[in-house]
Length: 418
Image (cartoon, rainbow, N blue to C red; front, side):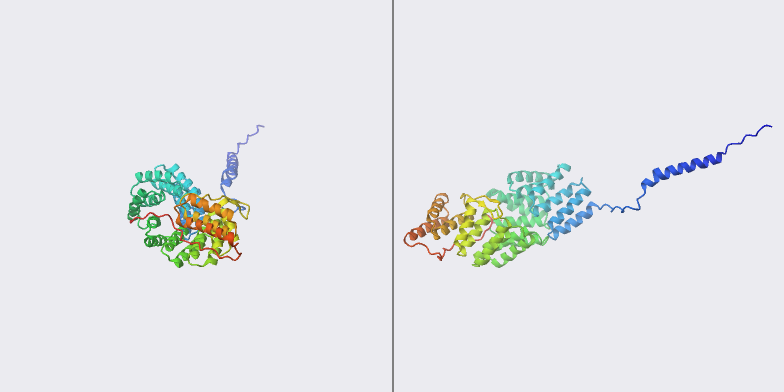
């Protein structure tokens, strides 16, 4: 009558526990690590080096904006590499963005405070913004850290030239030679030597150096602009216009190639072309009073006196541009032949249209403020003479204007033999 007890099924329990454990592992551990078949597979992350390769090639093609974008991608990929910030800063200076360049050079210094090249690029970019005093201090600091870096000596040459000191020009002559000795195969060393030769009136040698700089990168608008100015200085007008045109193609938003083409055509007597390019320069930057002044001078030389007065008045006194933006006028100060030209051309146009009250005021201002400028004072005398004639014979609307000489625009120079 005794019932026999059944023994527990240990094997079944073990199998059940294993199935439960496998289910937990599959759902909670394995599945979360697997890609969702309904989502796109993520793109593999590019290396910083691949972005740098793209950036370098874009810079060589003159595509500076795209090059900068590629460097920014490289920085996002490797934000702790100071070399990337230095590289983008060098391109930004050439692209006409020196403030951005300085910021990136300083980013490099946050990562590597003793990096001589970062300090030098910071100085170079500061100088491009007109901050020559800080630039000199920083570039000398860079030289103390790394006196054998050719690029540092190249930047030092430019900064010394821009200081305007005769002693610094003498020093820049030697620095340019050191830069070439240490970094003979760099665009910056030949560019710096060319700048030094230009300001010392060695224009033909400067052209050769700028050509050599362009052999490393033919798509730098600033170098073509500089070559053009040196061709103008040696009266090679055709080559100058070709160089300015190339600069304009590379950087069409820059008004200066158009300005220099305008003045070059004026110098060769092709006055309608001179007026055309003067207008284009103003369209590129409507609030620049000097561009307005050149536009007015070209109107005057084309016998369009009333139009000349409109533009020259904006240059001298300021006013509202066509788009409503404000133009700041130019007071007559210093020994500036282009500024003097704007004033005496304005006075001549006033005199020839019978507006002698204002014309005589301009003449008196020229005689009192820039008495050593022979061209300006001569034309002030012409204003007075024309107005005296007008008292007896009122001017006709078809009067022929006096010739206003169009001399080449070149950088200020200090005569020396490097």
